[in-house]
Image (cartoon, rainbow, N blue to C red; front, side, top):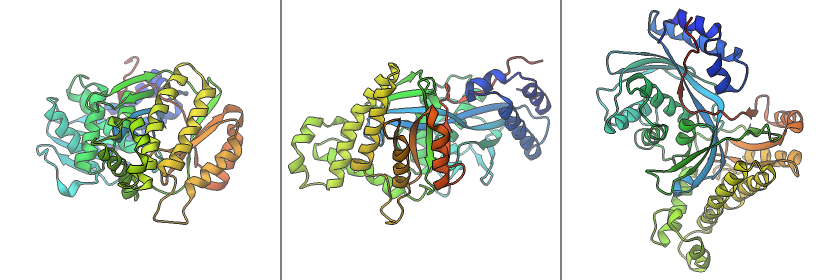
Length: 430
């Protein structure tokens, strides 16, 4: 821990350069400015002479496994260098006070860890839910003050919520638990908070990717003990750059569309006496299609078809990355996108027949990348973002084409980050 002036001195004189280069995969000057500005903001809000710590948690990009995790399926994701950071000082009581740029400040007294109805849908609910679950598991919690800022664009589908949850869990892991909480447990605690206290049903993919870091393959066959493995892979070395394209419409009001996917997949699973599709025999599903159509909608059947194919595809894409086989990976990535569009049907919302922002982005990607790259809907879908893998020699042309239609800043270049939630440490303390 350091006082503000000394911490800024260490940052500006290079003592955190090792962490900055490792986490952001670039020269550290931009991060020096960013972290020092947040330290100044902390001092202005909470006063000087506090003991300070620095934390970071990354956003994530789903690579494959679109809407498979809630059916106990397999997922491939990557953490990215866009992140949420915090300047934090511990308190001697149970009060947590958070000033997050762009949001209203809030405080939570963790003497009461019960779910509070008035907090549903707020960051305060996430903090209280994480604290409640950590306490249930026997871990310690403590009060702290924090200033938080994020480079994850709002509505980008890069899961700023999971980054925030990982950040809070990581803070408590280091402030009062001697770094004893495993990354997967931090992810599961964030998932609990989002589902139970925040009130948003979701799978475990986002939190796991953010907490673990790097390219991560996950198998949720046993959601209490999922299989998680990091894969060391660099798209740039293989000649490609990863992008998300912000098509311009927020997905904040699409909860009903998202909820319909697990509900309809669950209807198909229930026909076979199962709770989730992972427990259904794909061959039995196939031969049962005529009878199944009498019980569930065609859309539910198509969404189940997507699950079975996508779940298998994740393993194939994981193998392609292990073998550095970018040609095979591109074929499989495109198949994932085609399946989401045709079978999962999550590329445009039903409540607005004129909004086809995602299909438009996909069409522009196809114009510029056919035969060279791959493209697919990104994350939950219906609105938000498209993911593209672009040959390095086409990046300038691709960015210009996208931004001509969707505006400056709509083409977001992603770099894989090799670590999940972390506390930053100085290389030296001169």
